[in-house]
Amino acid sequence: MDRTILTESEFPDVDRKQWLEFVARSLGKDTDYNSLSHRSDDGIGIEPLYERAAGASPLPRLEPGASWTLVQRMDDPDPARAAAQAKEDLAQGATGLSLIFAGAPNAFGYGLPASPDGLRAALADVLLRNVHLRIDVHPNSRASIDWLVQVLRDKRADPARLSLSFGIDPASLFAGTGRLRMSIEALEASMPQSLAGFFALALPGILLEADGRVFHNAGATEAQELGIMLASAVSHLRMFEEARQPLVYAAPHIGFALSVDQDQFLSMAKIRALRKLWARMLEACAIDPMPVAIHAETSYRMMTARDPETNILRTTIAAFAAATGGADSISVVPHTITHGLPDAFARRLARNTQLILEKECQLDFVADPAAGSGGIEAMTAGLCEKAWEEFRRIEAEGGVLRSLAAGHIQKRVAAARMERLGKVREGEHKIIGTTVYTMDRERPVATLAAERQPMPRDGAVACDPLPASRLDEGLGEPDDS
Image 1 (tube, rainbow, N blue to C red):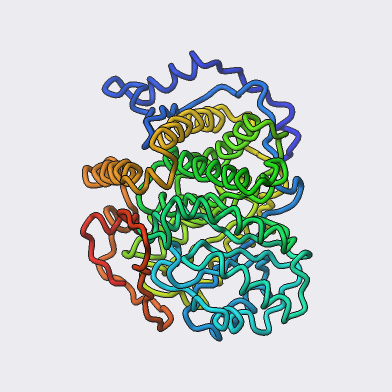
Image 2: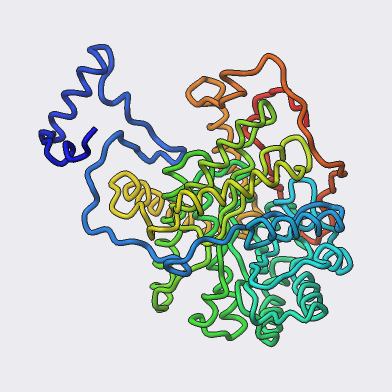
């Protein structure tokens, strides 16, 4: 066909009134337009069609024009095997590694040995030039900074020339493990000294992180996750103030980590809302707007044990949302995590999912592609409003740590999880392969031999923990893991 016919043809303009008339005819007399609308878990109304948002401008990423960092998880309890996995990942396109130690809330039962020797063995013969290294929050987060610095010195790698994220977040550790090794008052008193020690090392990158993944995987809504992260970040700013560090110099050392799931548009809006909320907080602190590092990991709670291959589709949509939402680094959880420690094939699929989105789909070509989209902008604004309400609620409860100690956050997260489960049980929400289109016989799933690591139970202060819990686990479905 001659392509010039496309430029010669004219299509009549259709305004909103005409569109609604077409919709009414297609739906029939027994169904109205309202059936196409729905609400998010936070009660935000989502319409089927929006006008283009006027005056919207793209949100800045950490490095405008640059692609995101492709991060692979290092969570194998066998350090030698973890080292081999890391070398394979970096050789095949990964640009970052996430060091996940045993006892970390996001280890999902596995993790590297939490010791200097374990880290040294895991990074043995791994070339770290131009590699982003992040440490997931775990009970020995502060000590692991010293472990990593020593390993880098032994490898003659200059830490000042690396991209680092140490991921210290007392709130997510407290929520994920239900323990703090010292009282909240002692923690607040000791953190300034620890921060001073960090600055003495002159290390670049992220020191403190507001990590929302623990709360998401326990059942939090998007706005709850955002509100908790904002409250955690504000507590970090207060610690910098106590350490007598100017906030304008402290802000670049604070980062964020969140979960993205198969709800593409809400996940995109969540990342964009986080940037807006943090910019508003910096403005309130008289700090000029600056880019912020956001790490996105695909949701664990959305993964299923039945028909685990459907998890590949879920993680692909989630990674797409993270990339188009503007995440600076992305980690895809392998699809077989529900059955055990993922093997090389599952890890390769997780890695290649991002490589295809970046290299073939070129999702990094446009900065903030959602800017101006009426639907995404409306959801972004709605999440900002609801998240700010959650943030103010937490602040009124004494801050994020005291709110957790009193169980306030846990109650709200549990209520959100139960409401979501109710919608699945009633058929309002469906899980492909679990509640609909189930297989008659499940195929065997290959995983690596590894013992699950226990969560630490020592600590001076306890709270009700928020363990990671998949949605399908709450349905009483058979679990082959």
